[in-house]
Image (cartoon, rainbow, N blue to C red; front, side, top):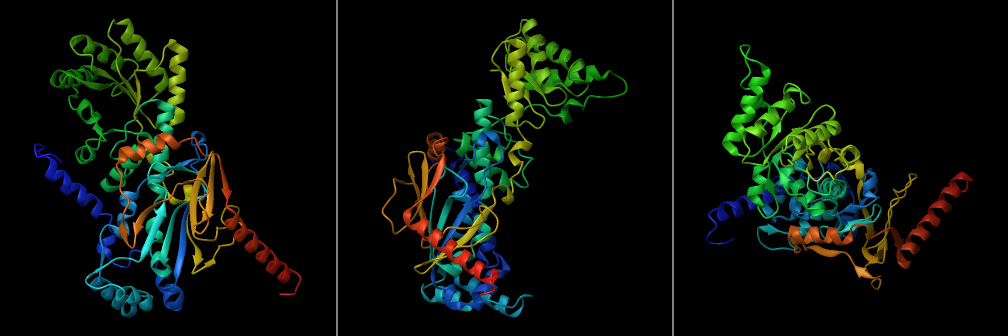
Length: 489
C-alpha cells in the first residue's frame, strides 16, 4: 500500500471483508455436521484427548493431462472458515443452550467445550488445534495426506465439513495448470459460471496458483488483486442485436453495432455469429477492419458452430485482405482437449503456429468441481499415542494410522510419522498454531512452487513405522474376519 495510491484504503478494506466472509456464520458452532455433537457428548473423555486427523484426496482429476497429480491451493479462504478470527465465549455458551434445549437433536458435547473455555481467559477463544500441510502450489499425489490436524480431537472433528471443501481450490489450481499446458497461454475465466462472487474470486486465486491465469471478466477480482488479474471485455450479443428492426437488413444492423463499438473504443473482439458467423458476420468483420485501418487491436470472437473451421477461415480471409494478423478468441465449451483439437486443425490447414488464437474457457473451470471428483476424506488417524485407522472393503478407502508428515525424495512422496527422523525434504509446513493462522505467503510465491514441483512426483512410499501400523492392523482385521467366518468369533 503506497500513500500515492488513491485506491489502497478501499482495496485493503475489501480484501479484509472478502476473507472475513468465509468465517463460518459469525463463529456459530453449527458450522459442522450434527453427528459431531452426538458423538462427543457420548464419549466426553475421548472428545478432549489428543488426536490426529488427516485430510486426503483419494482420487486424481479425471483428465489425461493431470497425470494423476494435484496442486495445493486455497489456504487463505479455507482456513479462514474457522481461524480467520477467534470464536467468542458468549457464542459458544449460547450454542450450548440451543443444542441442549431447542434443537431437534438435543445433544451437546459440554465437557469438550467447557474444557476449551476453562483453558483460556477472556472473551476470545482459539481452538486448541495445530495444522500441518502442503503450502500453496505444492504438487502432490492422490492418496497422500495433504493436511494434518493435531490437538483436542473433538474440536478437530468439528472442522471436517469446512476442510473437505479444499477439493474446490485444489481442482481449480490443477485445472489452471492443465489449461496452461494445453493452450501455451492464458485462458479467460468468466464471472457468470460461478455460483456466487465469493466462489469466483476464490477459484480465480487458485487458478493463478496452478497456472498463473490472469485474464478474467470479473472486475472486482482485478481491483482486489491488480498484481494478479487483468480484465478482458468486448462486445456482447445484447449490444449486437440492439439495432435490429423490421425496416432494415439484419446485416446492416449488425455492422452498425460493430462499427460503433470500434469507433468508440478502438479495440475489441468482433462477435460475428449474430446472423451467421461464416457469411454475414465474416463479411461485416472484414468491412469494419478495413474501415478502421489505424488500429490492429480489433479481432474476432467465435463461439458457435464449427469453431476449428471458423478459426482457419477468419485467419485466411484476414490475411488475404492484407490486414495485419488479428487475435481470434474461440469459445463454446472450450476444454484442454478442445484447445488441442483447434490448434491441430489450424496447423494442418494453414501450416502456421496458432499464436493468434486465444481460448475463452468458461464452463470448463466448473466442470467436475465437487467433492466426489477427488473423494476428499477427513479421517482420524491417532488418539493419544495410539494409531487409528478406518478399514474398508473398497480399494483406496482404508486410512493410514499415526501422526502423519510428508517428505519428498527424488520422484517419491514419503508418508511418515512425526516421531520418525526426516525422510528427505520436509514438504509440510505449519499452517495453524493453537488456532491462529501462522503461514502466509504471496500468490506469486505459490505459483512459483507449482512451476517447480509439477511433474516431479511419480510414486508414494510409506515409512517404516507407517508401514508397520498398516500391516499390523491389516493382520488383526483379517484374523478377526477369519474367526467369524469359521465360527470361532
